[in-house]
Image (cartoon, rainbow, N blue to C red; front, side, top):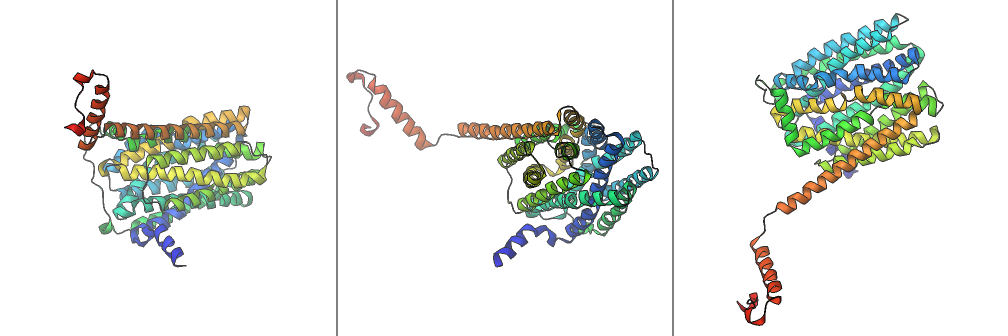
Length: 445
C-alpha cells in the first residue's frame, strides 16, 4: 500500500502545483469538447459524401493551417504572454464551434462550408498548440517538466477516451448540432481556468525580441541539435502516414469489420484508453532519450502491422488497446524530449515545428491514406502506417547507434592507453627486425 502511494505521488507530482491543477481541469473539459467536434465532423462529412477521400480532405482542412503558418505561430508564442494568447485563441475557437452548430442545424450543410469552418479551427490549433505546450513548462518547477508534459498528454488521451464515445451517443440521440454546441460550451471551463491562474507563480520564459529571420533561426536551431532533429524527422514520417486514425479507423470499422459508426467510436475509444495507459506510464519516467523515442516508434509500427491482419472485432479491440499504448508512448517521448532539450527562448518555435510536422503533415497524409483505403481497402492504409512507423523507428535507432560510435571514436586516448599502444607496436616491429637491430622491450627500459 505504501509503495502504491509513492507511485501515485510520483505519477501525479505536478498536480501539487495550483496553476497546473487549474490548467489541467479546464483543458480536460475543453479537450473532450474538441474530440466531440473532431469525431462529429468526420461522421457528418462521411454521411454526406460516403467518400474516404472527402474525409481525408476534411483532415487537410482541419490541420492545413498548422503546416502553412505553424512556424510563424510558434514565433508569436515566443514573443507573447502565453496565457493571454491562449485566452484569445480559446474565444475564437468557441465561436468556430457555434458556427459549426449553426451549419449542422440548417439540415443540409454544404461540405465546402464545413471545410471552411474546419480551416478556421485549424488556424486556432496552429496558435494554441505551441502556446499551450510551452505554457505547461512555465507552470511547474524544472524537475517536474517531464511529469507535467506526460500528464498533459494523459489529459489529451482522457479526452480521446470520452470524446468519441460521447460523440457517438449524441449523434445517435440528438444529432450533430448538439455535439458542436456542447464543444462550444466546454470552452467556458478552460477560459475560467486560465483566468484564475496566478501569474506571480509562473516561471515565464524569456520573450523573444522582434528581429528579422527569427523563423529561419528556429529552423536552424532545431536542425543543429540532434536530440531535437531526429525526433522531428521521425514525427514527420509517422505523422504523415501513421496517425491518420480518423480516416483509417472509420473505413476499417465499416468496411473491413462490417461494423457501424458505433464500432468506429468504440475502436477510437479503445485506442484512447491505451493511449491513457501509455501516457500515465510515461509520467513516471525521469529522463527521455532519442533511443526511447525510436523504440516506441518500432513498437507502434509493430502493433499497427498486427491490426492490419486481424480477422474480426473480437481481436481488433485488444490490438487497438496496444496500438494506443505504443502510439502514446512515442508521442509523449517525442514531445517531452523536444520540450526539455529546447532552449527556453526557442521553445515556442521548436514546438510549433513539431506541431507542423505532426498535425501539419495530415493535409498531405490524410488524402493519400484516404485514397489508399478507398481504392484498395482500409487494411492497406493501416499497412502503410505500420511500415512508416517501423521505418522511422529503425532509422532513429541506427542514427543513435551511429552517433554513439562516432562519440567513442572521438574520445581522447588516456596516457595509460598510449603507453600500452606504443609497447604493443614496439613488440610487433621488433619481431620483423634482425636481432642486432631489435628495439628494446618496454620491460628492458
